[in-house]
Length: 349
Image (cartoon, rainbow, N blue to C red; front, side, top):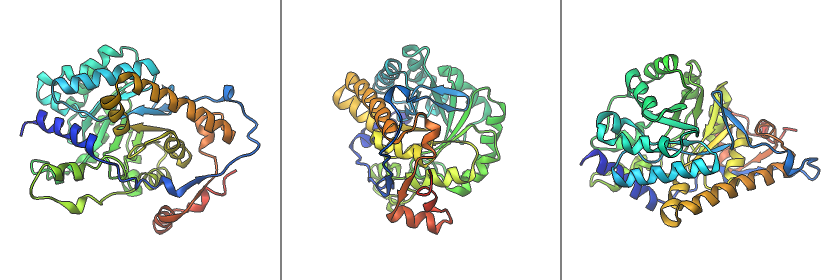
């Protein structure tokens, strides 16, 4: 099967795949504040990632990587939606365009449609420094995501089987690139052990990329007869992964993996993230309801966040990191078992 055909299959399966909902956010209860002493006019949604200022604490996350005309159309629409709403955008893996120059236009379209926006490039952890430079140049990227997709590769019959040297390659790229580097999991979560290793590099941010959203093991199993079903339930729930990552790193923490709503974004920020990436939900709105509805949804999410932050008396994203929340259920058990104090969040003031 060609790389382009496989990427198109990924888009179709991702649209049909239903998130498990096992992100852990249902186990987070925000503590209401009856005297917030705040107004909507005072709330700022600005956030910062590696020195880049984002106008909103959420962005359109990576979801398409190569695939011809269909991918070009999707990327163009996403870029226009990002331009009209002022939010950041990440492209999908650019490795296909690095290996096949015909695919470059399906990525470069995002900069053409959104010349002044914040755009993240995207490559795999197998990439070399020269490939990282090429990915940045291709779309004039403001930052570069390096994705970790061990489970997806192992689930693919044609996938990689060796992951030696990934940390060294990531560290080398982060040292040499002039734009911030973001390390991103692809749906199976960053553990505190992995975050500790990345903390010793010059990467600017770590995207938890937790379990509960698009399941690439399930997608790959849908494409083959010999299935590796044991990976379908593999991973760290998104809420747990955010906390694990934030517990050991001084890096900016980003959240992704099954984030479906403004309340999911808010809980991500309260748990320690500085911004959240949304992929599947936005792709579904775009393909089923159109570009204008996607723009409307992004604007609604911004409005929702301002309202909720006002209710909590939080005027900026940093203050959300001090907002109290009660953690219960499976998430409480996970954190307690991993030596992380779930009650620290309820004792904030």
